[in-house]
Length: 314
Image (cartoon, rainbow, N blue to C red; front, side, top):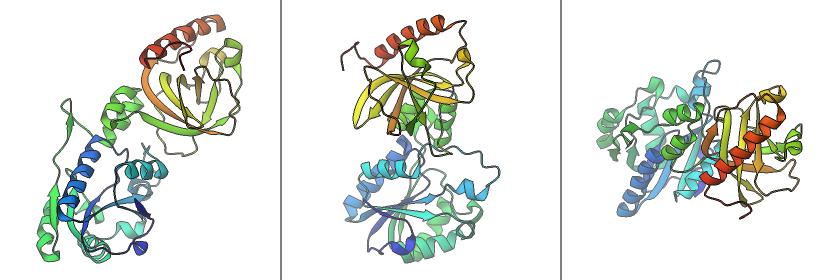
């Protein structure tokens, strides 16, 4: 997949099969759109093109009050879209000036003149252009004039619940990482750098790696204890992770700490990735460290069961 960070760097092609949107999460409904895009490109002998935006439009349109947390960083989204087997990814810089383009200007100047769109695939209820004036009916109106075909993908449901990036964010914010994973079609993941912590876990027999997530808008699931997969130096390990303020030891500030099973290497300053499998329990304040350790023993057994692992079987 070729990646372009501006429309000027994209070489106009003769048979572009295009879709557009923020695609935050690249979830199962997005995957349906991309599957249709690839099937049409195969039938028509065209090349697939996905147009997305960076930063997220809401952060530009509502800089003081967007309240947005993202499912993917830009690099994560690029990696996920590359796995989908697309030909071209155009990441348009989203600015105030760009937001003022009318839907007609976007169709004429971007889709047709710059890209060479012959077929456009859009998701259910997709809007674009100044004040979100563009719609499926708008595109149908201009399709004959500018010589392209268009298809709208209907709403995709999972257990009779419409899948959307918003619903995934809501699930994660409630700690329901299992549901979020079903919506995504894979485990929700975060990436961060291992930083120095208080090392209290070592005294309890559960050393932890403290993770600092650098992207300020990356969504962190709700406080609690989770069964996770940890990717360290390209290897996958089972583990359990705590998000919260460590109330038993009067912790200050929210932290993310993962205990990686059967792992004892020093990995400070290294980048690791965490996949959330399921929530084990809420974060609790225990009466003593002994009570905390007993709970951690139970947490580990539950995590091993959820991960379908056996003790020392790594």
